[in-house]
Amino acid sequence: MDVQLKRGLLDLCVLAAIAQEESYGYQIVKDMSPFVEISESTLYPILRRLEAANCLCVRSVEHAGRLRKYYYITPLGRARLAQFSSDWKELQAIHDFIMDRGKQP
Image 1 (cartoon, helix red, strand yellow):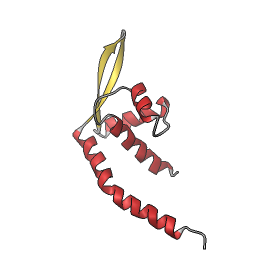
Image 2 (cartoon, rainbow, N blue to C red):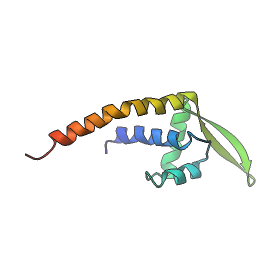
Image 3 (cartoon, rainbow, N blue to C red):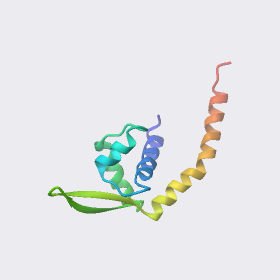
Image 4 (cartoon, rainbow, N blue to C red):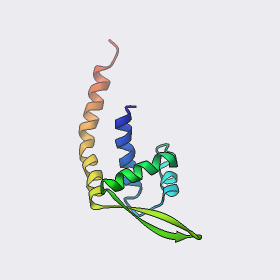
């Protein structure tokens, strides 16, 4: 898969994983695992990138004597998810075109 396409889709997957409620890194990986394979070492740069883009915010909470970072989606992050949803039909049309034209004669 194209690296840039995969990167964008993983960003959206992370936003979707925290869309219903805030979560922390390990739990996000666990929630995504039935659908997409992602490691914590891949997740944390995504979280930093999404935070820098104002698509999510982070808060720290003490848990078992350590600070745990909880991530939650912002209105801009929700807008990004909504945009993907509206773009899906166009992506599906592109997929259908590629599959139809890419067939062996």
